[in-house]
Amino acid sequence: MDALPGGTVTFLFTDVEGSTELLRRLGDEYATVLSEQRRILRDGLGKRGGREIDTQGDAFFFSFTRARDAVTGAVDAQRALRGHAWPEGVTLKVRMGLHTGEPAVGEEGYVGLDVVRAARICSAGHGGQILLSETTRALVGSELPDGATLRDLGRQKLKDLEEEHLYELSLDEAGDRFPALKTEQRQPPSGAEILGEGFEQRIEDFVARSLEGSLPKGLPVPPRRKPSLVLRFLVLAVLLGFAALVVVLIKLL
Image 1 (spheres, rainbow, N blue to C red):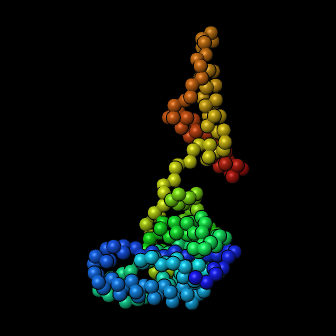
Image 2: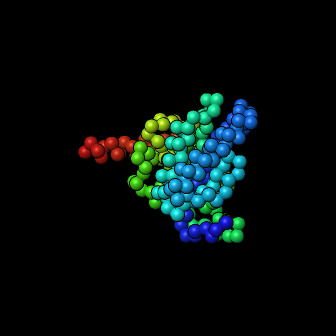
Image 3: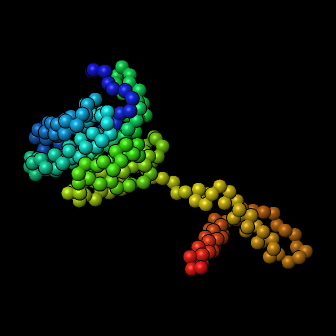
């Protein structure tokens, strides 16, 4: 392999959705489908400056020196795949994931978490879908291929990695609506994450003071205990409702 370019690189991974089912349905004819898929991807991505790093089965790994070229190549390839007449009326759907980083270049090629991140982004998608990382989206900016739009999918938890803000590059003529991404389920945020550090403790103190003030004089004050989850939720709901009322009154004034 010739020396790979270093510095900032955009990776693009592809994978065929439902390849096992296609193989079972087509039998020996699947080899022809796989060959055509490879030709279309190599043509669509190669003419935009994509460099083929590796291929395994029906999956590809390409690199680009420019994020915009990678995005344009992905759109070209998806449109070519959609417009191709596949045998026996099958529909071949290929998922694509793009991420930009500054990987190390070793003897065996690119190494580092940026390569893993790009592969995980691809795995999170569905056939026909193009997913972009936050870094790739920022580099592309508003210069999208004609007929393509961006859809914000929010922060997603990738397998074995921290969260990544993902975007879907949609093709206007396709009109596809994809299911939820195949990412790890995020844990619901805690009260402290929603309303600031220490808020849960302030709720506990508020409940404790309220209980102490309601006791008849002369009775000993019971030791403080952590309020039940239901009680803390009720106090939080009251406080949030009061805050919403204040906002409404300010707007009216």
